[in-house]
Length: 328
Ligand SMILES: [Zn+2]
Image (cartoon, rainbow, N blue to C red; front, side, top):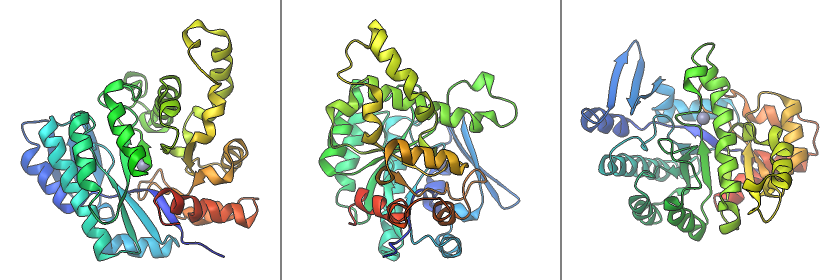
């Protein structure tokens, strides 16, 4: 049976969120400007340029229909809200989450939301998660691959992981404020390399810092097919066998590969097939990066053309995501 196609990597900037960033972000490093149909948004030195496809839900539904995608799990992306002073971060997160819940209520079969949280103030993040638990349609949590340079194994963050595990909501990671900005200025390397490299750094901290060990039911999705994690796993394993810095590890990093899920955004079928071979089809989910030029316009076709059993492709197109967000 063909399941619904569910996209776990789809970005949305609600109009009311942009308005709040414009109104209250000034003076705190946030800014919004518009030129030629594009909206330029920035916070804490992180900027993005978006057109109305990122904002307008009707435009989005038309694009989803054209790409055979049934459901978007809506997520904010850069600059996200981690850069802001805590109270502004909380206000921006609440604004996003309320808007995502409203989108779900308007289109209950098409949209769910990944909660934005002020991770820079973990106690406020837990408080907002408590509130989100009562908002219809919020089924996941969004998190940058670092929080203003703080790595994801930082103990201050663990109460948020605890709460996420208790709710049964997956954490969807996304590159943010990525590693090596001085070395990646040319050729769009900040994105081409910086994003997957930062994902690898985040995954390594979660593994070596014991987060996966401490929260065995916590689901964390790695963006962009796991970034550099998969390619470097042998090196992480070898280091764990020989290095004193890793004596604390109860098992090899490769044993944690199936503790993560991954999206399909590798831009290479052989790499996606390798990912499936390494982690299993039950750990790989459809992603589009809607609607950046670095994403997929036809994310379902990207999976359907793979030389895999249809049952595996169905899991990747929607079965796994349905399980993760509690629809199955
Ligand atoms: Zn993305």
